[in-house]
Image (cartoon, rainbow, N blue to C red):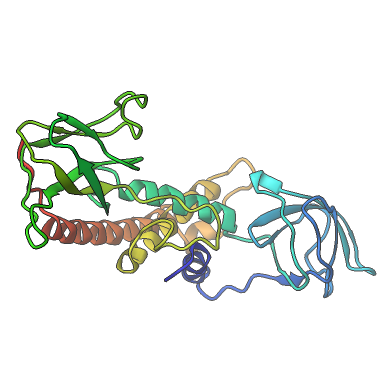
Length: 294
């Protein structure tokens, strides 16, 4: 099982392609409201106006004192969250791909995977007690349902026949249907336990320590899709930065790396991601064919 942080580290290795970013370490622990940092090694590029990353927090340097290796900083820079950091925490100076930005890109990609255009989903199974008389029954604990896969009635311990004339009702009043979702029966069904399977979207992660499998519910064999998605999202903005001609004129880079080269790079990544999504969508369609008939 992979954490979000481990997945993003793999993406960063690919994006940096051997480039070594300058680092340092925290000499004393800091709380979320501390504005003075003492470092373990020479400050190097850490001077007034620099930005550094510690864990997933960005800090802006207002003042640097070389002799005492001390920085006066602005916490939670660029929309990141100030947090406590322990002794020995690694500081990355002027990071090319900040972790919080990458975490945002990861969550955007997780959302995108479950869109109808991609056809990917996780399977949720739950048992629902049915009295045999109500036309609609609350789909217990459901919070976000894409579509039903199947509904089966526990007829015997070794026989779960499919109920075919059943529909999913959405946006029902929660005063009557706690989840807002309900199963609607268009034919009589005997009382008993219903085994319901439905398609649900993947879930966002909130921290680098969150598991991709147990929090986002993305299986291990699909982690490469997330890696390609984060990679393409991080690279897509590099071309925009390159085109800021107001701040600098054309350089030799225009000849060495022509305009559009970055765009072509992430276009290839997008094509590979698309191929993987199509392959995984086909696998899910084969595993979970739609058997309900309205």
